[in-house]
Length: 104
Image 1 (tube, rainbow, N blue to C red):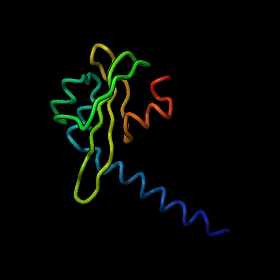
Image 2: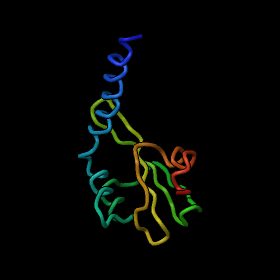
Image 3: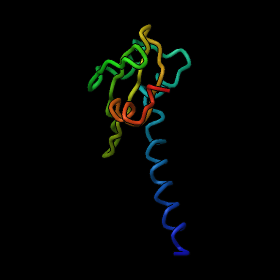
Image 4: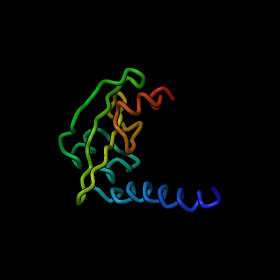
C-alpha cells in the first residue's frame, strides 16, 4: 500500500502528457484564441466529424478527432447562437453534455 502513490503518479502524468501533445495542433490553437468563432475554428480544423445542437447554450457543438503519430484524441468545441466559442475540451460533445458542461 505504501507504494501506491509511486504507481499512480506516473499514470496520471502520462494522461496529462497526452493532452499536451495536441496543444500545438492548429485546430486547438484556433480554439484557444480569445476571439475564436465557429468559422475561425472550422477554417483551422476543416470539416468536423459531427455536429449537434445544444439547447442549453442556444448553439451548436462540433466534434473532431485529433491525430498525431499513432495517437488520437477527441476534441469538442461549442458555440453560442452568434458563433462565439463557449466551451471546448479533450472529450466529445456528448461526453461534455453528460458531464453537465453546457448547463454551467
